[in-house]
Length: 70
Image (cartoon, rainbow, N blue to C red; front, side, top):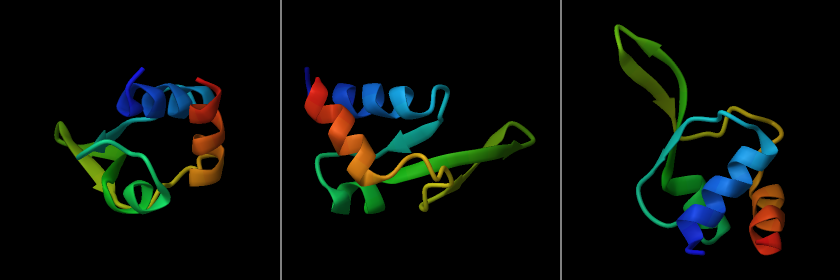
């Protein structure tokens, strides 16, 4: 399983339905902090995003733990 699929599976395990856009494979904490835009809402059909994860239950440590299980 490639790293993006593992990442997506880990996110869904931690918080199902979480929306995000990843600009590349997420393989370390630096990627987690810099290559993801988290969807926080929408305005007239356009996603509102932030570079900071708005979900306290999703951290790089927890994501990495879930990815390592796969």
